[in-house]
Image (tube, rainbow, N blue to C red; front, side, top):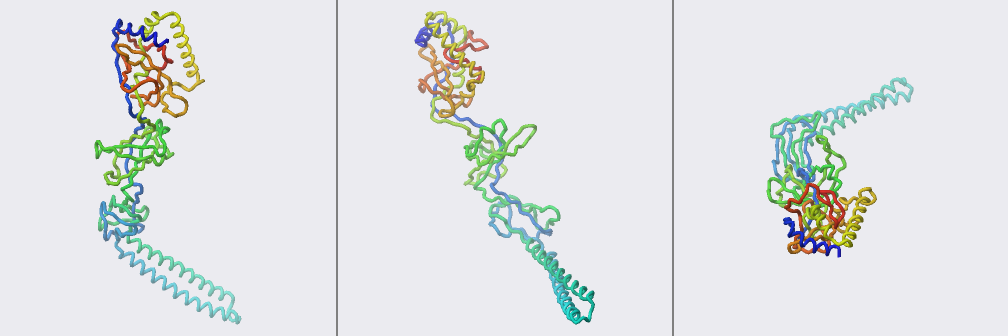
Length: 413
């Protein structure tokens, strides 16, 4: 009854005031909430291959982009010095073996004489000490021999994993020193058909990000082409750059055609929430209010009974808003962006729908919003025109109260 009376009064007022309304259309489509970030592509597993012994590079058996398998020989150092060290270790080991046999014979003779009480106990102790020392020296030389063997083996460098050589840092004839830090000779990426993106997400957005969310991204090498991935990990250690806190998000990316290469910069869009095949209107339609002069002129023409009902309705809605602002209820702007089936109910709002040469209010529920469009549910149909603004001298800088809906802050739902 209230809306019907207002409608017929508006029918005459539109023509007299000459207001020009701006319209949008009720559409059916998808709405996405997203978070944007940047990151870099890398292989899932990358191993830097070095050397544990110093020497000169004698042969290099692989080059950039070569595929290698685990255990394959990829380089060999010059073994001249290492082989000489091995021979010297062998000689030392044999010398200590001879020394052990000699001290063992001397100890046996001394022990026999000591049992016959021919030699003093001090002579027995000296023979025993010489024999035990020879045994210790033999073990030490055996360890040195094993070390020399291992060093000679290290001169042959093999691939620790199967993959692709993405970096070669040495050439034949170059000397590498492994005295303090192991030099990197090659970098091998495990499997470039499975890549990952390490994205930096701002702390203001990290609360919206979760494992298994869908991700799309682009790279400069392929403009206009989009790639897909899924979040596999959110690392807890923050990074601070110029007082901005970021968190590293790991995104798994399939790369079957090998288009994506390590080091590429990815412009990432993370889908945090979405609805598909829903009715949506421009978000400005939910914020539209007729000018106060327009409402005042209409109120003067209403019968007393209708005006009183209208005022009671407005007071009831204003009271509900005060409770929400005081913390008794959830804030309106927090509820307005919820998707259907979420916690709580979507926020009630009002849109103004074109009807012939006039406009009339219609109550709807507002759901998910991407800032440009907002999901709605109510007695609306696809293709209907809704008011998003107006061109009129009656408009003021401050929007008036809408008697058909609770007051809302400008620029927010």
